[in-house]
Length: 206
Image (tube, rainbow, N blue to C red; front, side, top):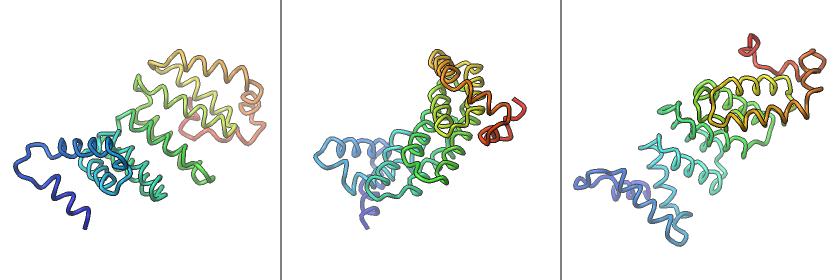
């Protein structure tokens, strides 16, 4: 099959010291050629790289995105991110790309629940990292779109209390939320709407 021939060509050559370097070189060559980045050979290369070097979030994301753009395989693409996270759940950028992927392919109510789970896992794994500001901001925007304003208020507070490099943006976002949604936040906190029940149980002691 094509994949076996490609693997034999690029990896099973004993005179090469670094098979991964050869894979990256071949991928770069295809990216720079006409139509190469859309070819089946390129897709197989991305698959090989993402499996052999799952910590390389750039190629993990490229392969997942290609599965969706070429084949509409959303669940298969999601598994690509999940596999990579098994090896490095502390990689902030990988979580951010996974979140972006989930938001881009967010269609149904079930997708909403899946996206929320990914956000929660990201916060658990890298939320305290100084470079996690973008994840907090995306989560705040996501919950704002669902009008879960009591939870948005809590997320903003937690983000402000976290030593993030994007602290100024977080404070600006919190100010914006309070300015535009103060009444909704107070209504939720007073238990006068269903949205007030949307705060996950693990946050109830915050």
